[in-house]
Length: 171
Image: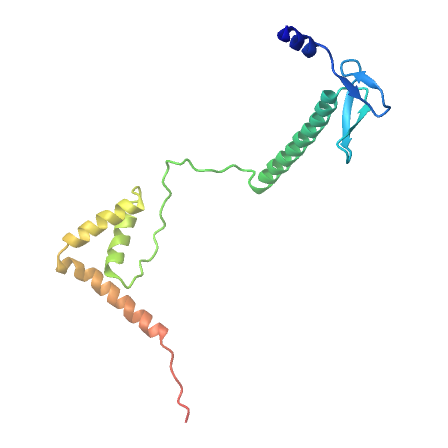
């Protein structure tokens, strides 16, 4: 018997207290809550549309605005990119760049040796060339190293002369 009463209570619409002071059914009148008063009584207003419809219209409008803004930003970015580089010159990732031969200037003999190796092997990666140069430098005899040591000493002397300033006597 209790279960039957529960089922009946669930199917019967509950009355709502409105601002006019009358009881109305939820199913017959579409009511939207407006604000809560100080005595925990909810003031409700009648609308033509159900609450769901108002929410979806507002959400659709917001979504449309966002989409328009994104489209405008994308247009601006595309125009800016076209102005900056109309030619689309890009290298393939696997193609190595040509290394420009620069005058090797260093005060360190190993660096001079390493840079010579680096320019002789343009296809290899820098770290691989450096590892190989280190191994070869350690295995090299003192006589072979002497060439690079002399070049480094010349550079030290050249920089030493250029870096010194002459002092004037205060007399």
